[in-house]
Image 1 (cartoon, rainbow, N blue to C red):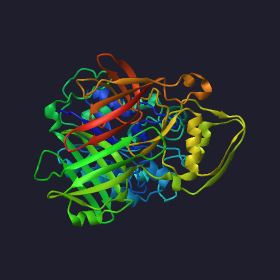
Image 2 (cartoon, rainbow, N blue to C red):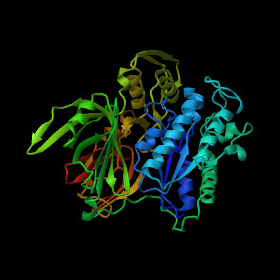
Image 3 (spheres, helix red, strand yellow):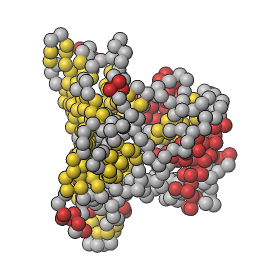
Image 4 (cartoon, rainbow, N blue to C red):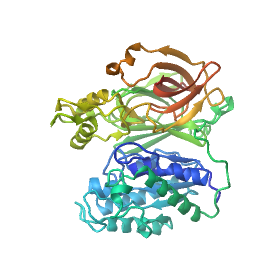
Length: 505
């Protein structure tokens, strides 16, 4: 088969994390070696089973429009074994459910199973049993058996281990489970070869990808191909809503969904026209909502959060208007208070990791502007989330929700997660304007990590644009690399638009 596009599902080992900071994941090496795009949908902390209710295999699949993919890779299990003690039956059931969901969404997609690499989290070898009473060998055998039942090729690292008892302290960034940048390259090389060997024909040769990924040019015709896929997770099942060119199944959906670089949960609004009254009555405050949007064959997540308020339906002419007010991410401010004391000279990384461990906050810890040292120590006596936000400020980093995932990141780090050009050919629809920030940022004590300048711009809606993405902004008078600070995805029924504020270091 000629592979045109690959989607990767997984946890932090697929997402790209060395135990201390974000690194280039193995998916980048696969893309390079096979000369095809690889869309990385992995989220750190994800489980195969549903034990991590916020991030797991089935949810990743449900949140992804699979219509444009030829190959899907599946790589879960580490968190089930080492952090959640998920039962083997739950893991096998979730793997079966996820595979069935993929097949239902795209019957022609080729799946590739990737077993977890060995972990030393609570284990000294592959036969050490976890709190649920099974070993890594048991987990790997269980996953492998499910893949084989479906006729899915499965990569088993035990056949030729990259990480062993002899080298794990060097091959893993934390010495426990997360690969170093060098190991990620080796993994990508192995996985690329495995994909190539297990597809009927290798992908046609293509030029080596440029270091930046340009957004597809979108014309006026493209706007008529705009699509929305929306899922509402009610107590009685998932409600699926679609807006596309197929008028037999499409509903009119409008939205205003902001994003920013603060720790406050962004509040948005979604309007669904002519939803059935029965369906509306199933929707309640607290239900999870996931919105994917984009253009035919190229959609992605723009919102993941909860409903915080439903409104009374209104009628305009012969049409019913159902409006939902939604809030992004998980509310960690409601967590129970904690008491922690750190001694003199404790650095920010140590404090952050401890707060996350004690509180259970699901944090995507990417990078820090500086690893601030608290010379007089640090005390937490109250909300763990507020303490996390305070420590983030000291490191000149942003604590924010990125498509529903709480993220800690210095916005100008080198770990590019969305590196592309935005110009008139790729969706820019207004001339960027610039505003210089107060010069106080120059003083080291006042440097908040937000940058010297801010640019404002408007684009045709692009799901890739969200907080922390790095954008090459180009117009007649502007040519800068900038980091996305905030913005808003909107659709009024006619015009899909993304407004964005960008910062320049």
